[in-house]
Length: 228
Image (cartoon, rainbow, N blue to C red; front, side, top):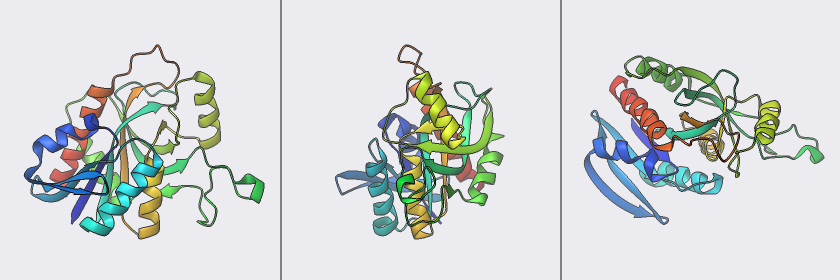
């Protein structure tokens, strides 16, 4: 088992890089891939850059050039679901593109033409392992399994939040997960997306708890390695 870990921003992978042992850096496709082990398991950590194209390219390189057998996307997200709070964690049941619209060709909202699915299901084993790993975390926040919506837009308005929640019935929103999930779907690689809520995606004045949220997500990922 070799696990690829993707974070869009440096803050989303810095803790995992700190605990990566036997670290080697490999440059490819304009990205730096850090190989080594976490709790005795092979890992490749990479900062993809923000957005769906960056994330898709990064995932493809992990699979084709580094031979990863599983993919975990870690990071922060904006909360959509009622009852969610900042620092709660969402483990993907599935991922969906909230900004894909081919309804003019007869497809369902959010459906990528030709793939015969509206969303991309996360791996059941990784989901359950994440839930078990959460029990070992000493955080006071909550964890839930839910759909994660992705799009190439930073959501920070109550109106846009309402629209995405209505369209996708998603728990949270971010900018990479669905593209990572789509690549894994097409290549048969098991994946899970783990996102800690950094804000409630409503306005530009709310506090954006990026650093702490990123650390919470990363600690959970590290605990997953301990159970594999």
